[in-house]
Image (cartoon, rainbow, N blue to C red; front, side):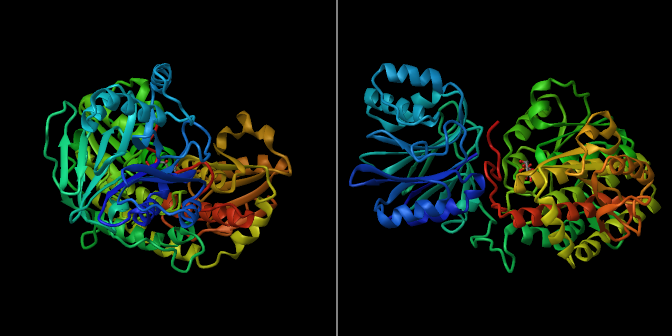
Length: 606
Ligand code: F6R
């Protein structure tokens, strides 16, 4: 993770570096720092914690250089202290880094033996001293970086500036994303195009193994074999305006409330309204003959994929293998020829998901991805991209991206089922109609949030919370628990309702709230039986359901009522109450809702 920026400008760049870092804070916010070349020397300012601390430091002690690099950190090696904050530097070289240098220990020992003194616990500092050592040997920054990079193992995107070189910045990438921005007598570097949007919309994405030598007049790019290469400059569509919170207190609240609109947009993208059927891009594979779908993703996106498994298996009758990407990437799972591999990712940059994509490609799978960022690495490496139209998601806890992923997966289910003849035109129309009602029902759920505010008082006292769901509502239970724990820091677990009696029921007492996702579907009665088991042991039940159902007479701590809707749309709709429960509990507890501790929005390390 971490965000990096670099500017070769025509005026002091420190404020522009900070502005660019603000757009990258979603990648980490443990510390921030910038370094510039001033009168031939390297100068830096760093601060622990959020970017505002660095801004304060710069007010007290400004930087004047017109060439500089900046970094916002998500700590991997070493605590989030100022001494571990980037940029790291020697007298001659300063480096910002996103990724993990896996052989840093060996490099450190070797360099320490040669007299280099380290003053941080980071892997990145080994890169600084390695380049410095090479520079001592050859006195050529480009050659020094080339030699140093050849010795690095792991994943990295780096930006490097040098004392005595005001018109030079070197960038390199392997495994972590990096974009170059072209300006007028100015050049820019950033982890993504969003960071560079205020300065330029002319962007070149570096490819795996590329190294770029930037000067104000332009960039030279070399591929992984060191050969000069041309990479296209594209016009980025990313808006230069910082997305704001509107009338909401947090980005998360705004993004929850945007769902009726962005779900409509995503559905409109995939549905032919006149015909009442789905309309997808050609996946380039014979869906009628599909033998298997392999889905992989992380976190919330994985839970979206899990809902996709239930849908595709039930309605399209194709076996679906699904695993979290960090497991699938090392499992060496056999994948039958002719399969479809599907990746779900908001950012499109998640390192584990990308690694599985590459594994699946090597196994001859057709690669499709559901992504929210169309210029992302996962999108660019896919055969077919199925975009979600959620718009930028700033809150670290995913909300609108999740429901838009579900909308895209629901449509994909219909596409596969139609091709395989398991979904008739009539059924397709009925299910499409069900989906089209989702935005309206979502708005109804959000019309009054007082119930969630009241519930937050009680939930905030809990040490543990359990979520239960059965069938297609099981992934919702998992997602509900994830949402609550990541923003309120209350321990929460999601279970398949039927699993309760196989262990977790031991946890139930009058202090453990149990949140049950139980729409009135064909499994409802079975879930209610599990609710009875909880009630019999004094557990406090919060039921999320439609209708006047009172869980067969059990005493409920709360009954969150959801409008009647087509069962096909339940997972999308029931996502909203679980988001609101987590949101209001976190607000009540006073946590940092949009930037919860230890997390980052884009996870580009293993
Ligand atoms: C949780 C959350 C994460 C992400 C996960 C995958 O609220 O947002 O679990 O879903 O890190 O990220 P993407 O979707 O960018 O691949």
